[in-house]
Length: 79
Image: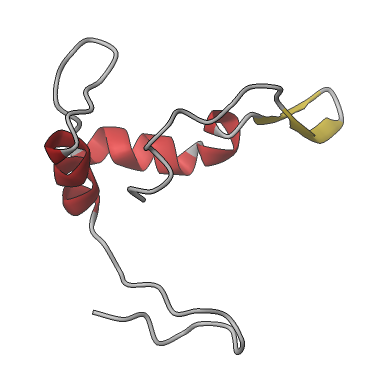
């Protein structure tokens, strides 16, 4: 299924469900910090807090500061 509400000039991206993301992580052999499978609630929490996971934060009036770490290999290609 293709998202039809894209901004003109931007590439259309396929819609993917939280369960599909969780299954993709499982198929790639990726697990939670406790060694378990990802589930849709965890994926939603990660996506809702994506700025944090990408190293951005807002604190005490300072925002948009990016962290100095590298993204974990393989994660960004899955979502």
